[in-house]
Length: 480
Ligand SMILES: Nc1nc2c(ncn2[C@@H]2O[C@H](COP(=O)(O)OP(=O)(O)OP(=O)(O)O)[C@@H](O)[C@H]2O)c(=O)[nH]1
Ligand SMILES: [Mg+2]
Image (cartoon, rainbow, N blue to C red; front, top):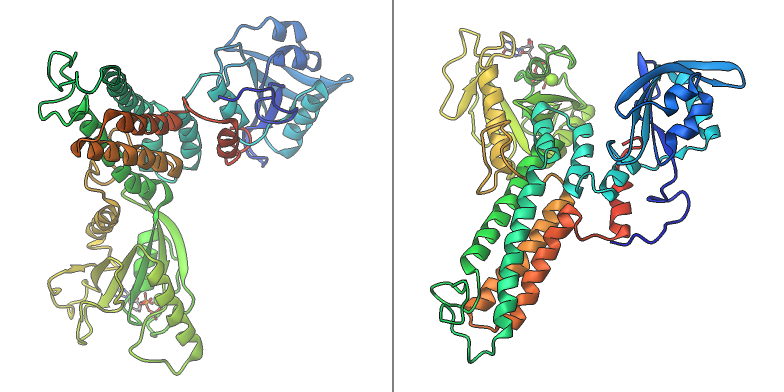
């Protein structure tokens, strides 16, 4: 790791930093976070009880006033952290001020005077990583926790924060390192001496079929596990980023009524006249833990409408459907027209067929493949939500995706960076196995194993460079 002394004001310069940890808005409390060697000494002269603060034990709270030149700025509680038992691993203070903009800003101004500089985005977590408090997967999960939209998304992030991915990656890397160590031993034997599984094969690691590669079965196991991790990524993203579900159908089918029912409020205008919705409306909801961006669109007529605004609305509906992860095709069950299954969208996007107005006596039982619902009474809505979640899960499911909707089990990558490095670890490992199959010598196989192990090391941060770290942490929010 490059630990050359960085410029002043840059990540890792070690100077005392401070940042708002809560949004600057009217609120009950605001928290300002400070970290850095000597943080307590710096803040003490601006605190009403300087000696009390200076002698406070780690993990204790001191009550007092932030003051400057005799003026009381705000009454605060200061949580004191002593090195290395803090989030960053440095000495630190969390100052709980009164909420709102003025008090928190006033305290921050004093901290600047005291010598704290503004923290850069993610700088607290950067320091936690540099000081060995957390690995990179845990550092990234901190941001995932902050941005999680649903309970399921939070659970996935919490699993990573508790080290599920770190442990898995470290164990895979250890296995690769073992294989590499064995390989090095074989490389020390001259080729004609070496018989896999023979007297010179110290651990019998070359495997029964030979193939000339020590720890072959173990390498295959690692490769399979990397494949499973990569496959689980899509599902993780589904729970973190969410999906777009578009409600579409003929005019008057009850799309806006269904939209309102699903979001639980009267947002979209409902009217008995067809062609009511022109522009699409959207809202974020949680469906069985999946964040869903739900859109209500203008009804699609066969052919054009005499109304040009409605035609523009229909164009927008089609464009949105093309973008969607799932189209909810709503049919008015009481209508006598042909319920062509493909209507109203013929793209590749997964679809669910909904038979609306099931509450009306004139509504017959739905044809096969249609879900009967009533947007008015709410009947069939729980089943519809289940079907939406299942359909979205299916779009995101890799061959090894574990658990049912909302269930977060075991290790899975949560960020694009982690997923890419998992792929970068799998590719050379697959190549190594392939070369071994073809009887290629170990001296060209060993570097591929090393490449794979290095990619895994980058995931946890055991292998990293200052440039990569700065790029990564700069995407964090300030105060984290
Ligand atoms: N009985 C009954 N009426 C419904 C149901 N869903 C919608 N309606 C009625 O059908 C009419 C059209 O409903 P909307 O929700 O505006 O239909 P839409 O598909 O959004 O229509 P456009 O925006 O014009 O394309 C309204 O009079 C609703 O009250 C339902 O489940 N049962
Ligand atoms: Mg509508």
